[in-house]
Length: 446
Image (cartoon, rainbow, N blue to C red; front, side):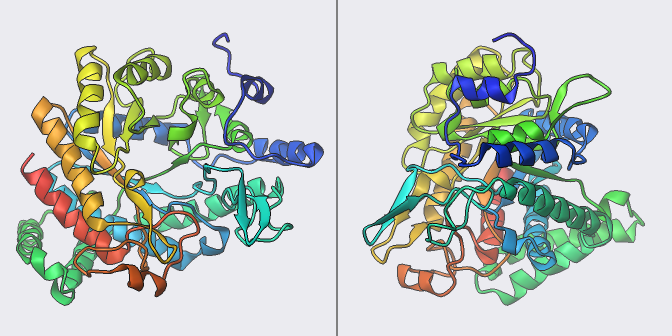
């Protein structure tokens, strides 16, 4: 295919994986047309700023913290939920910033993460087979025939839910909620009141003294009161993502304006596939997941296609091996990419390679496995003299019970108390903060 931005029809002709089957083409076309006429959710200039920050992370001059829901649901696109997600990410970022002594790039896995790839097109319960739940962007979670029918109106619902979420995020991050002193006060309460947090009292006290010193000398920069916060999601549904692509008036190049940072999933990264073809035309910073089946040659070929100009900050490889495989599988990829002089920022996704089902039927992860994969990620980069650029976690600001282990010592039986995720398990508020302090120690020894 030539270098002209491909039409939706051309992308489908290539053969797009993980796409829903809509029964009413006219309704789908009408929804896509409405989306094409909606205002952008993010702006090209913001995407460029993020690209510069991701480039800095690739050089070791910043660190990326990316987190949020595995799959957003419309019912939780509320002010309280958005505030809680933002709060825990800001708390994590303060700890990581202090430990790393470099800026932390804050990216929410929100305002667009409404679609999920699935391993099977169908789900069977008690002898009844229905289409699989593919996220609120496609169909409903309720196991009924009516709920599971893909509905194109949901694409418009994604836009409106994402718009309201981003409006809230912008208000919170510029309106005083993200003030450094307030965020540190929350962390101090965590350290003081949580049995888990007490382990991190020393670092908490260090941060306290640093802030007190800044106040004593009268330092009060704008960065104390507001933060830059970016949105991201897996750009899975081609109808939605294509409709939300605009030609930037400054550069005459395409940007996906549904999120600042979009990525290709492990299941849709085929070199000759529709998603790679679509992504290679975008001017956003983009990511690509790499799991245990990815070879060094795969990584090199993807980099050549997705970032032919070898631009810093343009391409991020998000690795998801599993705690038991990362130390063996990651070095070959990093060595090949580095040896060829390819500019890539490396992020660890320690969640997806560590998922299993419990004897009582819950999908979960062990906190210790998640942490061990991050440690393995750091170990590999340290051994090779390369840069661990960041982490991508699935987490929430709520006190859910979805991941076992950690300082709270949640066990399999405890999962029943508050398991709320509709797809994959997430770190809860306490586990998220515990991870931040643990990763902070890794950053300090980097």
